[in-house]
Length: 241
Ligand code: GLP
Image (tube, rainbow, N blue to C red; front, side, top):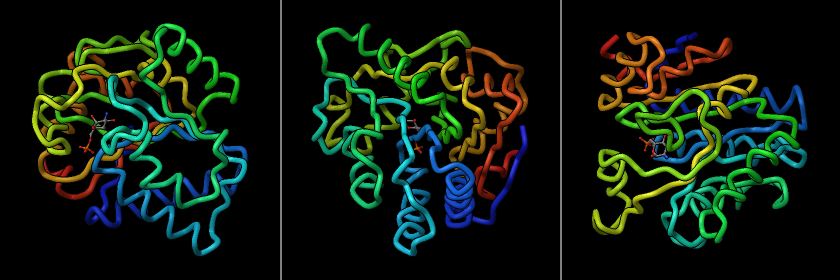
């Protein structure tokens, strides 16, 4: 893994946004894999700024989000679909038919999962996948116990994920207990992967990812199986290295 350490959260956000823009400039049909969570918010702000300055055109770009809660409507303020509208989709010229967030409220979840995989393949696969990381090492909603052969599926959220994400809900009991996520196999099929981590609370898991061989106990370690992964950290997240 190639490690980049930036001074702070703001430079991390700018650095990754610039990588995305360069990728799109080199290939206007770029397919992006996109994360949610607190960490990528600065990156999205930066992308919107660059779009407003005429530095990037999203009109031929396709996006696939990593995951979504099960049980929230698309318009729920904490759904990842709503998050993406608030942070990116409403502000740039991505075409509605080119953005994809796995949708969780359909009756046949198995078909939904298979269709999402097919749509990614049909788009030509993901060129650049941006990932955050959970405190337990999850990527997307691939919790500890996930395997490298997993594709898009329904998962039970780890207790620690439910607690960590409860900061966005009025109470712990409002946090969905299940999610839909693309799998580790889906992630590893991407041409290039960037994992971003910011803040002291991520420093422990980042050092564990780097110290361990690929293991289902820390799903982010599977990224070591991929030849083109960049870990972009701010100083705080790298402070345990
Ligand atoms: C959620 C998302 C993950 C994300 C993680 C970390 O659980 N499903 O994709 O990486 O949160 O989020 P944060 O950046 O807020 O720490």
